[in-house]
Length: 385
Image (cartoon, rainbow, N blue to C red; front, side, top):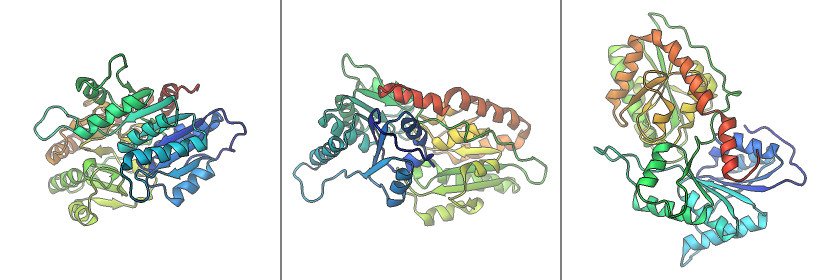
């Protein structure tokens, strides 16, 4: 939860934040929002799914919010253009000075609306590019993604990515316009190292075995089914191994029907979604996140901060969180057998876990400190930290 701060009189700037899901404002982006408020800026949060509960939580913190209408009410000959005009009018009425837009189509709409409103400080954050196709060694952009990036460059003053693979993909696709710079790279909003401290590892003995944890949204792209299949494979050979599973409501990607997830998760222990992530991580020895695509997986960053080895996919974003066999293991995305083998490698050598746990916390401190990430975002928006 974002800390409550009295709304400052005579705020310095008015900053509008666009996101694909309103949950991001109370989760990943709360460090940025808190810093903006502390610096006496006014903040407006916009998302297509802005709920009354989220709006109330933001208002408690001194933040304005709006539901983002990506299509106009009623019939329109050019709905995208009409939506951008309506949003531009809203930004102008609110008095926006700076915009940060992220979240796939929301990034494009937010950046273009800000340009229509006459803003000159517009940061577009690219966070949803395609994973490699089956059998391919590299990702490729879909036509709609190419168009989105071209439009982001046309509208934004700065374009950024959340990992180096995405930057290379955009450059290699020839989408950086002449005389413009390649996308900046910033590791998302980072993780609050003061909020998530390193957690002592649970004891390891011959009867209890190791405990693995996956916490993720209920979408196929997170690799939930791969984790469930891996749990079944491992527990058939090592019944004392525990596989905890905590899921959150679907936010993006392809939704995973509850019935399908329930059937797949028979070898897992389900955890209530309301449980604090810090308490969840404290129960585990190893965190698992075999996502098919995650530009910068926030749950993995939280696991690093808490000092847990990580099993995750060797795909864009995820691979930047793990140094192979130093603080975790990288696996082929979509391969449940590879996830099972990685888990079994920890079961065979549990003595390596404490050193890997320390390495994870050190990596979080070195690369993903929220203060450093927020400073980078503020600089890209032209805001003095």
